[in-house]
Structures are given as C-alpha cells and as structure tokens.
Image: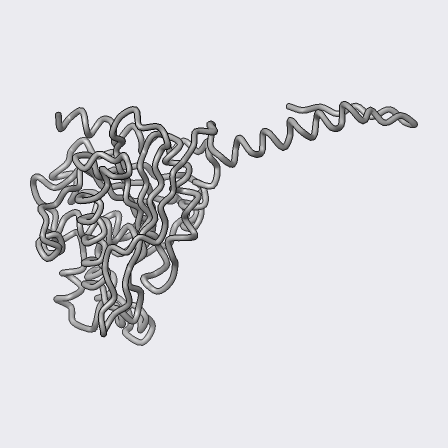
Length: 300
C-alpha cells in the first residue's frame, strides 16, 4: 500500500512525484496483467471473403513476441445477443492472453439479421483459418481451444459439438477444448418453446420459428463421446434463462465428461463475466491456461 504524509506548510515534492510514479506503475502493471512481455498484433485479417450476399469477416491475432516454442491457441467469440459486438472491443483480452504465452485470436462473425447457421459456419471457418495459418504467428495448430461469452459461448459450444460446421468448412474438428463464460443458448429449444413469440422476435429472427431449428441450434442435442472437453463458468446472478439452460446442459454433459470443471462465480452478473478480464490478475486467466495445459497433457 502506498502511503502519503503531507505536513502542513511543507510540500514533499520528491515524495509526491515518486509516489505518483509508483501509483501509475502499479496501474500499468494491473492493466497489462502481471508482465510487460511484448505482444505481436496482426489485425483485420480476412478469414471469410465478402460475397454479393454477405459482408466479409475478419479476425485479430495476438501472439507473444518471443518465439521460444509454438504456443497454445485460444479463439475467442464475443457475445451480444447475436445482434451486436465486434472483435475490437476485446483487444484487451488478446493482449492479456498473449502476455501469458497464449496466441489469442479474436473473431468477428455475422450478426442478426443473419441467422445462426451463418454465424456458426463463420465461427468454424475462423477456426479452420487458424488451423491452417496460425503457425505463422507462433501458434501450435495441434493445440487450438475456443472460448465464448454469452451468445459467443453458444456458438463456441455449437461448433465444438455439432460436426456440421467443420464439415462445411472442410476440416476435421481441430478443437482441443471449449471454454464457456456464462454461455447463452445451450438449450434454445427449451427456451423458445416456453416463450411467447412476440416477446422474443429478435431471437426468432436468428433462430427462426421452426422448432427443429431451435433443436439444431442447441449444443444440448449434439453432445457425444469424443467431443472436446469443456471448462464452464457461470455467473451466480445471471439471467434466469441461462441458469435454466445450464441446469439442463450440465447434467447431460456430465454423462459424457464426468470430470467436467463447472464453476459458478457467486455475486457475478452476466456482463461481469467478461469485464472481469479487464483485471489482468483475474484468476480466470490462470484457470483457463491450466485447463489448456492439462488438456494437452491428457491428449499426449
């Protein structure tokens, strides 16, 4: 703790300046997340070219400057109710993971009025691009993980469990693990069958009014042996719809992955599950890195 002692009628200028310097240094240390390791940034790389019908999609890559070894890779899919958000908002996440020896890839994907299959396909195409190209950025293509918050968690879980999207992308599922941060939509079928259509018009624009599409969009209905392992975090004070879907999804997942790590963060709200990563010392960084390392050891 920094302590300042100011006597009346006397201004210890040197002490104030030194104290201010230390305070600013601590702020910078917290902002960078424990270390000043250099980060290489490659931004707005197109992984899905534009067509006459759809805009192109791009991603940002953050990698450690040192090339001591190929680094594990984390692809992050942002949230925003399938309607908003962009990769640039999460540059802080890329920087912090890169400083911890992880190549972080932050992606954009189509937003509503696009529908969920286009979003999931773009997510798979981004991972396919990573698989084919990440070695140029110091990443290890044999250690690719995916993470997502909210709607991004839905897409991460969906492409990780439903082989449809990687098949369309022309690659075998290269994911070694899936990290969910207060993921929404794990059981869209269960959610939408209980809602009044008019109330959830925005969701129906994404998932249509066809109940079979709701089921196809739900990772719950694609669980199978051999899928990548999950690490799941949920906010203690999240939306009831997320609590309900997790209460169904987690027991179903445990049948396939009995050693699943599922953590409920008491007192956290939905948005806080991503803003907590603004703190470079947040323990979730360590949790995710350890999950990646442990999963790699189990696969070796």
